[in-house]
Image (cartoon, rainbow, N blue to C red; front, side, top):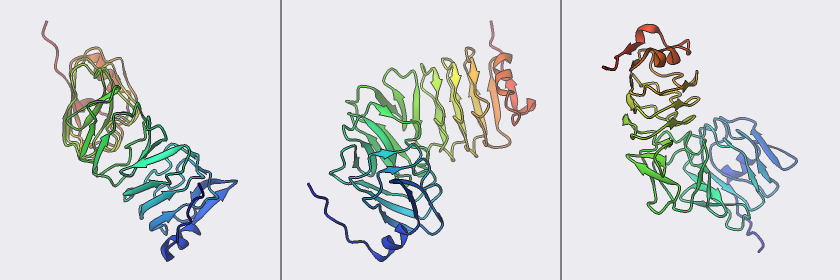
Length: 275
């Protein structure tokens, strides 16, 4: 079916002039401060490159034509006011629903508009990428359809169905007790949670991934109940509150935290487990 040409507004015409396109790939925006409002991508674009729209904070709407068959990870990184992501219905690779982009079969989540406040993951989705909600700083409600075979949700946090791995958390969370049974807190798991003040990590956790709590600038209290924790990535608590305090159960966990040069000895209390 032939795609119907969209009549562009004056704003959209100006925005097109800011795009740098090489051999069909949209590589970057020449001036991110000038890209404001709505953008309709042209049919000449077949691929959106990594961080192509980096920090285009004035961008609010993007329409993706049927010509685009590759959207790179973090393509819309930093587009904090983006509330509309719409894919042409004739696109053979991607589709969109409620301003979230999925693969055509709706099994993989590709990107969510960063300005969204409410997201429900459909039952068909079996792959939520690590960057799916990275920039959704206004997100207060995050849940999964109860029929989903891979994921579940509890208190605005997504877990694998067996609740062994935490996948993502709503950025609006202020206080979190991670579900018992979770063994892994992944990279970027809480990275958009700028209002998070305290978190309790259960005794089943063995790994805290890279940038798991990145930029949680209000995070001041972390209780780690796990004595079987084997790895905390150096950047796991990067750019949290300067006065954050950790309570742990063993000297071994304390040593893992101190691998990060930003965490001082006096910020960690070891509450020994009674025998």
